[in-house]
Picture 1 (spheres, rainbow, N blue to C red):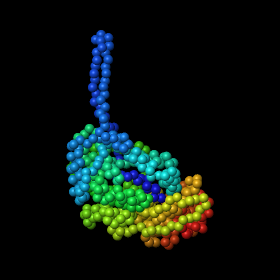
Picture 2: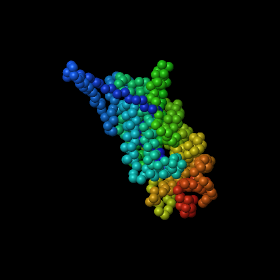
Picture 3: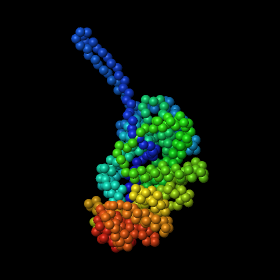
Length: 465
C-alpha cells in the first residue's frame, strides 16, 4: 500500500507552480560571404552559421544555462536573505543548475524515469497499478499510469532541490544578465532546501528510509521542510510594492499539463503546501524560527522514529503532544496459490489518499485524524492476481467508528460495486473488485480481492488476522 504514494517519490523537493512552457529563444550568429564568380553570368552565395557551444551539459545531455556574473552576485544576496530568515548559515556555496524551461521539464521527466528503473523490480509496477485499480483510484493500464506520472513530473515543478546530489535546479529565461523577480523567488525557495540539506542531513534521512523501505516519516518531515521554504519565500514576496507585484505576476510562466491528471495525484502536495505551513505557523508562533529548526533537527538529534507523522501535519495538536502511531500486529493469511509479496504500515495520508476523491476532503480528514495505527499485507498468485489485507485501529472507539463510517461512505459512493451483503461477521461489497470489512471494539479489518470465491475460501480467517 505504501507504494501508492511511493509512485511520487522522486529525490527532489518541489516548489509548486504550474505553467505551460513558453517558446525558448534561440540565439544564432550568422555571417554572410558573397563570392562573385562572373559579373555577367552567375553569383554564388555562401552562408556560414556559427553554432555556439553549450556552456555545459547535465547527466542526461541537456544544456545548462551559464549564469552571468551579475546573476551570481544576485544569488549571493539571495543566500543572505535566506540565512537571515532561517537563522542558519550556509556551510558551503550551493551548487545550482539553470535550464531553459523546456529542458528543465525534460530533466524532471528523465530523472523520474531513471529512478523508476531502480525503484521497481520486475512485475512490481504492474502490481502497484493493479492495487490502485482495486482501490478505485483509476482504471488505467501500467503504461497509461506511467505516462501520466511522467507528465506530472514534467508539469508540476517550478524548481527543485535534489536530496542526494544536493543540486538546486531552476528554469530561467536565456540571454538575460539577471534573474527576474519570479525566478529570484523560486531560487529563494530552493536555497532554503539547500540550506536544510547542509544542516538537517536530509540525504542521510532519505537514505535510511530507502534502506528500510519504510517512508512512514517522509511525508511529515517533507511537509515541515516545504513549510519553512514557503515561509521564507513569503517574506520575500510580501515585501513587493505594487509595481514589483505586477512585474512578478507578469513573469510567471504559463505552465499547464498537456493532459488531464487524476486529482488524487495532488493529495500529497496538499499536505506539503496547505497543511504544512499551517503547522509551521503555530510552531513559529510558539517558539519563533528556532523552534521550527529544532523540529527539523530531530532526525540528527533523536532519530528517524521521532520525525513527524502525516497525522501530526493534518492536526497540529497531535504534533505538540508528539502523538505517534501505534504498532499494529497483523497475522498472515494462508491462501492456496498465493504468496506474501509485500507488507508495511498505514497512516493518515494513506487514508486521505485512498478516500478523498470519493468522499471529499472533510470526511477523509475526519477519518484520517484519529487513526491509531495501521498495517497491511499483500499476497499474489502466479497469474498476478492480488489479495490485500489491512488492519486499522483508532485512538478510541469513536475515532474507530469514524474510520468505519468513512469506508462505508467510500464503498457506497462507487457504482463499480454491484451489491453488498453480510458476510463472515462483516460486510462484503461485490464487483470486479470485492471489498470486505468488519469492525470490533479494537480494530477494523479490510480485504480486497478480484475473486469472490477466494474471499469465501478464507472466511474462517477473516476475524483473526
